[in-house]
Image: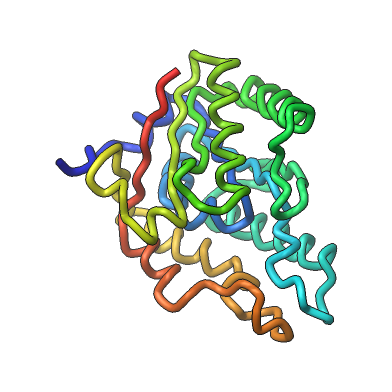
Length: 230
């Protein structure tokens, strides 16, 4: 069985969508075409949960605060490339690798996101899948499911970044957005995340850099989502 192709507007439910990104760049890699399509039509918003400050922890030139500021600028630029304005982003500001997991932090994040959903009039939320191995991705998956418990009228869709790259698990199930019409903008948005492509921070050989072919994989393939039921 192959994933069912869907028009982005069908997933959006005729209202602006909300994409939860664990780190700056996840939104462009996994949802770039979806975001570009919705910015053209019903509207979209990205809530970035962590600041990405620990992508290059051994850099002497770039402190964690400077990396966080850089990555926020990269995310803002990427959203602009996809068609969004400056107010199409919410920066939750949790420290990288510290997406909320305990009850108190989760409560604060959920309350902030519920208020954002109400303000947007969003009917569909997109979060990372629990199959993604990174702890922040798992935490954001749990946030999405908490939102659904508070608002069972919402539709929650999960996307995968690392599990998709390694296992391509959604190609045989779930829902598919054909990326073709928005591929150029998606590619340009991914390119905005220069720090994660090894183009900015050059003094931490152990820092993160997308592997050869990583960005190209997400540009070349369609986008896949699995709906989570209440």
